[in-house]
Length: 463
Image 1: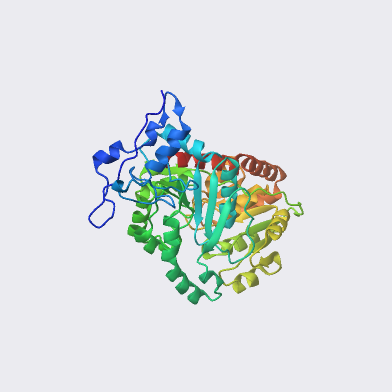
Image 2: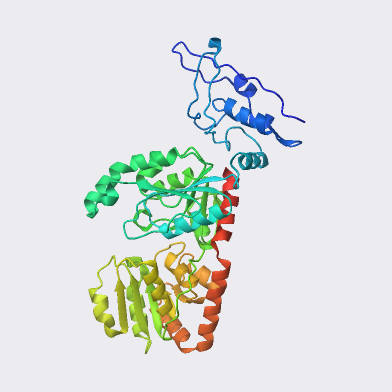
C-alpha cells in the first residue's frame, strides 16, 4: 500500500487577516503522518516529509511552525514556503501509535531519533548531568544539556552532545550570596521560558531551582521527566502543597531506589508515574595508598551529612584515622579540636584528581547521613573506586550497600553501631575483602550505559 495523496488545505482567515483555528472537520482532513507511515508498507519518505510540512499548523499538539513559514490567504494563489532545515516536533504532530512515532523519529533524525534536553538550571550536579548526557549520546540520542555555569570549578567537556550553560548568566558572576540570590530570582522566569520553549522530544529536569515559583510557572512544550535526587528537598519539604503541584506537572518521575519509590508513593505520587533507575557509580581507578586504617568522609560538608557522628565513631576505634575531604558549609572548629591528630582535613572544592587521591588513601568510607535523600553521589564515587562503605540506613544508601554487600548498614543515629562496623572492617581482613568484592560488584553492575538504556525506554513511554 502506498501513502495516499493528500491535498494542501487552505486556511480560513478572520476579518482581521489572522488564521482561524481549524475546525474539527478541517483538522481531520489535513495532511497527517498516519498517511505516510503505514503498518503494511512502512514509511514513504517523500510523503512523510510533505505531510510534516503541510500539517505543521493543523495537527493537534503540533510544535511551533518552522522558521520561514508564511501564512497567506487561499485566494491569493500563493504557496506557503517552508524552511526545509527545520522540521516540527513529530512526536506529537499527530496521534500515531507508539511504534509509528518511534519509526518516524528515527527516519527523520537518525542516531536513535530521540531528541532530549537534560536540564539542570542551578547546576547542582554537573558530574551526573554530563555522565548521563554522554551515555545517552552513545546510545544514539541527540542530547542537549541546558544548565548554568558551575561556580566551584571545572566541569567535564561535552563529548557527543551539546551544552548551553548560559542560564542565570548575571547571577553566576556575583560572589556575595544575598545579591546573587536576588539577581537569580529576577533571572528565573527567563530560565523557565527557555526551558519551556525547548524544541525536543523530552525535557528531563534534574533539579527544581525554585519550588514555590516553579509550582506555578513551570511549563514545557515537550513531555517532562523529573529526577527526584533529594526526594523532598530538605529546605522545602514542609511545603507539601507546593510539591504536590510540582509532581503533578511531571509525566514521569525517576527515583534511584525502591525506598525512594515508596517515599513518593506515600506522599501521593501515582505509582504509574514512578520509575526506579539506580544511580550509576562514578568509576575511577586511583592508585591505592591506604594504610588499612583510614576512614574517608567525602563530599560537601552539610549538617545532614553527620560528620560529628563520623568523628565520634572513629575516635572510638583504636588506631583508626579519619580523612575529611570536601567543601565545608558548617563551622568545623569544634570538630577539629575534638578530633585532634586523629583526623586529616582536606577542605575546599576538590578537583577530580584530588578526589581520586583521597579515594586511593581510603580503606573504607563512612556516610552517616540523617536526611531522607534518595542516593549519595559521594557514596557512588567511593564504590566506583572500589572503596567499601559504612552507611546509616536512610533513603537509598542502605539499599545499594546491602544489595551488593559493599560494606555495612547501620540504623540511623546509632553511633555505637557505626563504630562497631568500622572496627569490624578495619580489623577483620576477611570482612574487608568481602566488602571490597561487593564494591566491585556494584561497580560492574551500576553502569551509565545501563542507566541510559533505562532512561531511553522511559522517554519512549511519553514521547
